[in-house]
Image (tube, rainbow, N blue to C red; front, side, top):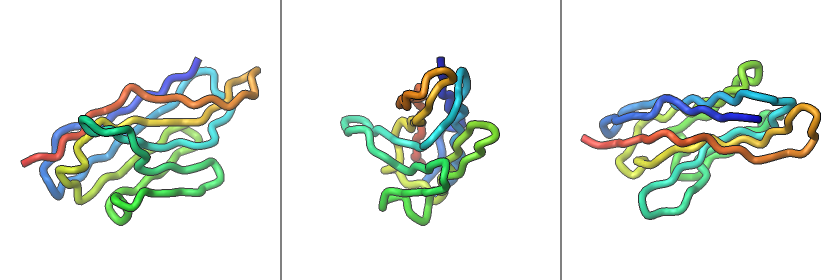
Length: 121
């Protein structure tokens, strides 16, 4: 079994910063991609940023220059540093990872439980 556990959400004023963390644990053999998605009320879940084990990183346009994704492979952890936050960044942020387990080469997609980010004055 594999679990993704997020932390770091909360309430912040516009222009402020937050750092999200997501740690993967369990019967992990290898992790290919780790990333962050978000879902605002009444909207579909959307990609924010992701990174592969080879170091490829992609951001969606609306966070470029403000958010930074990083990964610690030794800790199976991905981070999202969010700066210059705007009210429209308010959403539940979900961690996502593509993982293969020991004794099973199949790549599977896993989600964390989500962490709420509220940007408001």
